[in-house]
Amino acid sequence: QCGECYRQFNSQNELNMHMQVHRPRNVACPICGEQRFRSGANAVQHVESGYCTGCRGQDNARQQIYEFAQRQSGMQQFLTGTPMLTNGGHYDSIPDFPYQCRECAKSFRQMSQLLQHQDQKHN
Image (cartoon, rainbow, N blue to C red; front, top):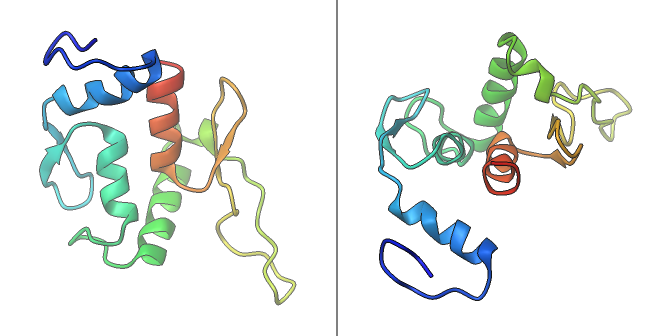
């Protein structure tokens, strides 16, 4: 049962996911600065969606986030570094699953998926 709104849930996982609706919307987008997100994962998801005014287009956003992670020494531990082979036989600049959880080694296509995973499974 939720301690905030008293809604009942069938599992602890469902309750944990629900509790996100009670978080304040005080996280800003690292690109456009819009402050309306409940978590870093939600802010990164906003950029990855391609709708961020500072980084239009999903492919462009994915490239920008990956390059940002490569430049940040604290984030490099989450990069797999395994490039994806393209149809032309050369390597793409972004691996297919570039992000990896250091606690359980699960790999993710998007940074927001890794952040959500860590928040829900290891926090």
